[in-house]
Structure formats: C-alpha cells, structure tokens
Length: 207
Image 1 (spheres, rainbow, N blue to C red):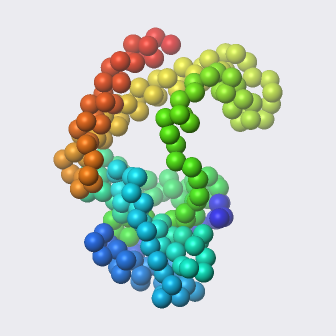
Image 2: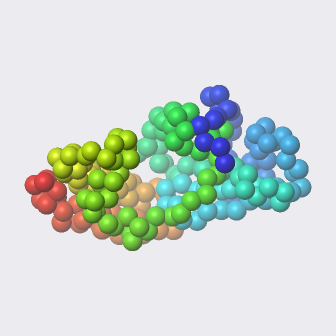
Image 3: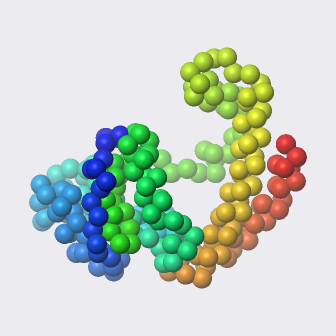
C-alpha cells in the first residue's frame, strides 16, 4: 500500500460499466492501469456491505494484496452527491497522503487503491469520553498542553455535527428508497435517523 501518490489527474475512461457484466467490461480499464497483470489470473469479488454504491475488487493470484477497487455509483445518487466534486476531493486527499491511491474514473464510477482496514461498528465508535478527545487534540496539536476550553468546544461541535449527520442520512435514505436497486430497507433507515435527530436535537443544541 502506498498513500500520498497518484497517477496525475488519473485516467478518464469514457465508458459506463454495467454491473451485470463487470467482470468482462472492467478488463480493458485494468489493462491500462495494470498492463503487467496476466489476464488469465485476474479474479474479482463484490463487497456487499455498501448501501449507496456497488464495490468490486480486482486482483491476481500472484499478488492478491494489490487490489483495484471499482466503485460503481448507485442509481440516481448524483441527485444527492456532486460526483465531480467528490472526485476532486479524493484526488486532493490522495495527494496529501490522506486517501488511497486514485487511478481514474469511468462514466459511472471511480477506480482506486484497496487499503486494508477494519469496519466500524457501534461499539468502536460509541465512546464519547472527553479524555479521548483530549488525547486526540494533544496528538493533533503536537503538544500535551490542551486547555479544557478547547476540549469542551470540540465536544460541542461534534454534537452539533452529529445532528447534521442524522438529518443528512435521513434525506439520503428517502432518495435511495426511490431509486436504489440495493436490497435494503431505506425508508426504515430514514425513519430511524430522523427519529434520532428529533430525540437528540434539544440536547445537542443546548451544549
């Protein structure tokens, strides 16, 4: 894995990929990005945890860690997500070493590096302890001298953006329920997020 490098501007493939034929339609793009790969060794798998886009990994038997991710946009997600801005943001973050290596785009998706990691769970993101926030700020600021006011201010801001997150994902889920082909209860998810927004709004706005 190499962060902080990218193909300048990436490759722009003027084709749209059909998820029903992804194994064959991705091959010409892979040959441009990985010309050294033996075509007979190329394998692929679908990552099934996403509920906005469809994600496929392509790799070879000789080096399965070198995986190309093909993200195919979900139906009508461009109504809610500015895909051109998303692509620019990804390239900027990649150049800064804060995102996977960006390889390029096709008409309905992106291609980038696979980076191993752990999937977040409710347990791993639940702890709101201010001691953790203090440790984070010490690392971020490069100093052990972090004032209580700075810790409390970040805690307050995180709370307010938590509200925004609930509202954002509620609206997103309503749109997805109309257009997405992914088998998921989007309306049920929208109800849960909007209810959480209402339940916590007064608390977070009072911080």
